[in-house]
Structures are given as C-alpha cells and as structure tokens.
Image 1 (cartoon, rainbow, N blue to C red):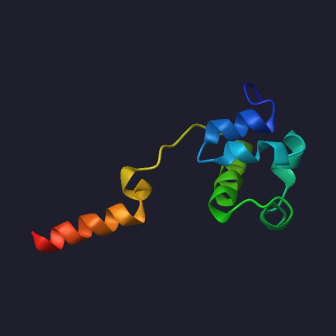
Image 2 (cartoon, rainbow, N blue to C red):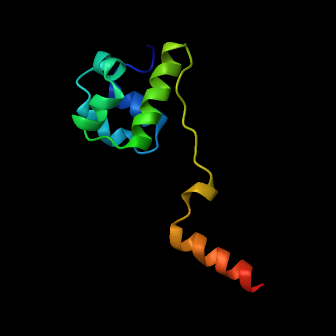
Length: 92
C-alpha cells in the first residue's frame, strides 16, 4: 500500500471531488469491495465520481499508483460560457 493507508488519502490523490466521500467508506477493504450499485444507493455517490473511484481502485489492483489527472479547460467551462463563446463565433 505504501503511502496509501486509508481511503481518505487515496481519494484525495485521485481528486475530482472524490475526497468529499472519504467518510462514507468504512475502511480500506470497504473501498475496494463496494460495488457501483452500493455506491449509488447506499452512499449517494454520483455517476462521475463512482466511475472515477472504480477506475482508480482497479488500476491500483493492477499495480498502478494513483495520481491526479487535471480536467481540461474545455470540459470545465460552464454551460453559459460555452453558449456565449458559440454566439460570438456565429457573429464573427
């Protein structure tokens, strides 16, 4: 396990808002055994974070240590910003 000895550290490292769900995981074993359905119904974790957590727990099982992957600016723009940009392009 090394530097990852609890769910909180693991979830902080993978980022994307997953750290706010750290208290919902009982222990390290629970983080790696919980299903997507249980995360949804019992823990109230949304689809993006569920997929992200499941992807990184699987990578960790395969021997890949987690690291933060930043989201691109394209995907972090608000809808209103995207609409304003599209409107400006149409008028140019």
